[in-house]
Length: 116
Image (cartoon, rainbow, N blue to C red; front, side, top):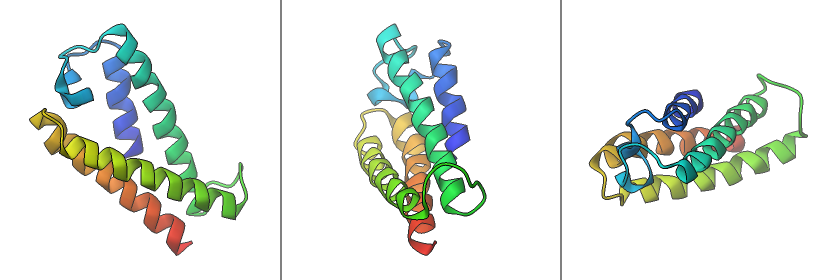
């Protein structure tokens, strides 16, 4: 999920007309300032992917187990909020496509952190 959303954000950065799936669907093509936000989202998605892999024991490199668990729980909270924001979006595309993606990310992060 993380990589799918990261690739989607990269497509937004390059100006593909996918803006209706993000930021409330206000723009078909994201303006330059919002592309900066998309770039920060790519970084968050990739860091989240690395943390869930580390917390799940697949990737071992950066932080202690406890720190990784806390990071995963913080990310789970972030994606839970993101799920809610997508759910109340005016854009049907954002609501029906991005909401489930964010929810799956939140659930995966929380379960991985709490089970390990």
